[in-house]
Image (cartoon, rainbow, N blue to C red; front, side):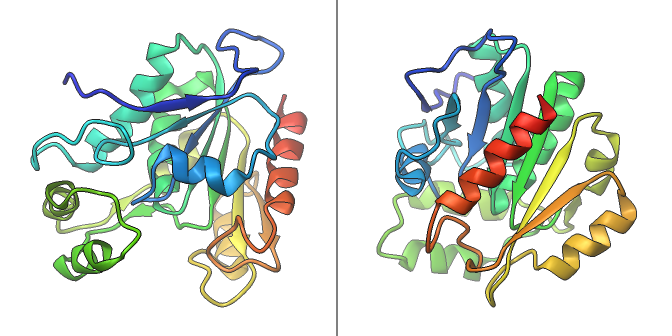
Length: 231
């Protein structure tokens, strides 16, 4: 309640353009909207909005009891509401993909398409060791209380998001990295396709978990092709 969320929008962003529903983008778990914008290298021309989830970037960092999965997902849906977006595509990278799945499920028919970048449909319990690794990373910009809050409120059991995928009426694209280090390798995509035959899968063969490297253009091409086909 009352949490201010940072959103970066492109110059061509139009929340009400019926012919071009905007793309809402969710960074990885510890990253901000600015981090994702840097990863895109100004190469994505489709109208988009990038959300900094609470505790990241220039968004507010509330007390440690405000970092459940649902709290974080609510920041995505709050951005959609704040900009009066009636229909949109949603992209989530890494653990931001788990949040994107639930955010898309929350808006039902208003979701025109979902893209998940190299992360299984699950929000896992997070350990104190995970927090230590995040805080020890010299590039980390998250405040300690936010990192600790995410861990403390991640729960003892994973949140399974396959039911959310099964309930979505929109097209879904699942992206995998093709190299060692990918968190959702192509074999996992094949298994998910058995559960949900209509799901689309694609692999970036030269990328590990970091789908933006070594070259962001293949990722952007997959995103724009998916949007064009879904639209």
